[in-house]
Length: 191
Image 1 (cartoon, rainbow, N blue to C red):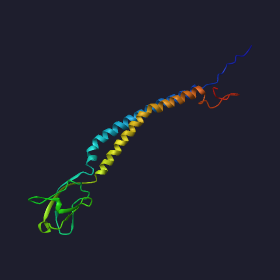
Image 2 (image 1 turned 120 degrees about the horizontal axis):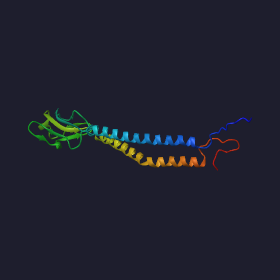
Image 3 (image 1 turned 60 degrees about the vertical axis):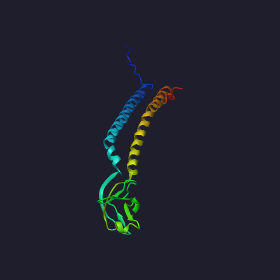
Image 4 (image 1 turned 30 degrees about the vertical axis):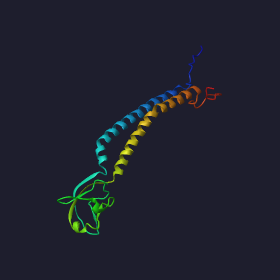
């Protein structure tokens, strides 16, 4: 009697590596799309919530800042970096012309000019102004907008990146680039 031998088949070909690569591609694309969606929507919601706070950076309004004018002395206001065009100095009865002063907007101080000392020397006045460094708020807002622009550009290029990976995967399968080793006498490549 003759013994029956079972034929064993060895797994050959490139399907096993290709299936894993395709699954990785699908999962990678799905995760990257979800990240783009969540980062964009959460970032947009956060920006919407704090936009007023960002606009307020460098825009602080001060009313009735009391100071006493003195001869030949720079009298400081309570804050520096005064916005040009927002300063108003007044006393109980009238608004005082800014032509009577040398104003250092960056230092936040006023200097009583010669010829007005007798009239205004040692007088109590008040000042209304807006102070702060507006460039900081504009820079913060610009960086946020730039971040959203970069996120949008990444989203625009995602289909091209996916297409490039799919083409590389298909070429790898067709040309045998994903197959690492061959059997006896085989090179392991399709050509």
